[in-house]
Image 1 (cartoon, rainbow, N blue to C red):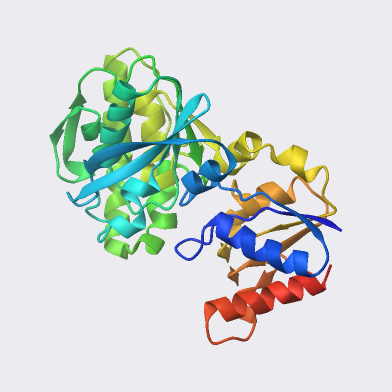
Image 2 (cartoon, one colour):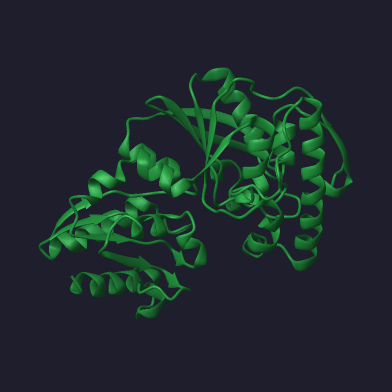
Length: 336
């Protein structure tokens, strides 16, 4: 049997290539032919997946972290475009307090890439610890913010349109609009109910401030309902509103870049998965993207919070996560 192994990363535990390698070894031992194709939705670990599939050159960026710390991030110069993984700058590992975490470093990074690299810039959003709606992004891009420090306290935004003429595409891992982002994703970023409510009110005001700035430049209104706008705490909306970036479902865009359809056309079975399977897994993420492309898909995950059939490591015995992973994987292989 020919099996394609196409997992996402298991956030904070193993990268997608590492997960694919472990699954590949078990399948080979069982006598199957295997083609590994680690995937991404643009979030944490996206750079590793792209670098494993394409020749790439690293571009070092020195930027400001979410709480003012120094961060050195690596963008990838690939064939025809530059890829910037936002989690390497504003990921949860860098953020100790979602209420104060700033996206300023992402704006600084884009400014540096604009000066140093030619061609389109692709930004991968996902795994962020920020909820500032792109306020920091605007400041990092050189725009002047009057008022603050909270989003609801800002009175105006001024300055020229940043990065004029630069083609930007954003890979988003969710479809949520900006005004729902704090409520939906705030808890997993450690935000309490008060912070979520305050941030939601602030984001609504921030949308008005940015649209007033756009009006001053003769640009059309961007609705708060923009799909994918809530990615990375509102950065999807801000990247579109401030820079004219196009927003795309990350897993589908990555699948096209990695030529997933051609690989799946030769597969009898596909194995995919992620660390936690939930409702968002079917809305623009890797698992949903694979399920939509092949008839026989087996899912290996850490935890299953859906009605989908899956081999969830939390449901198998073992003293460590590695042991539970191996037990779940053995059951999956035995099912083929």
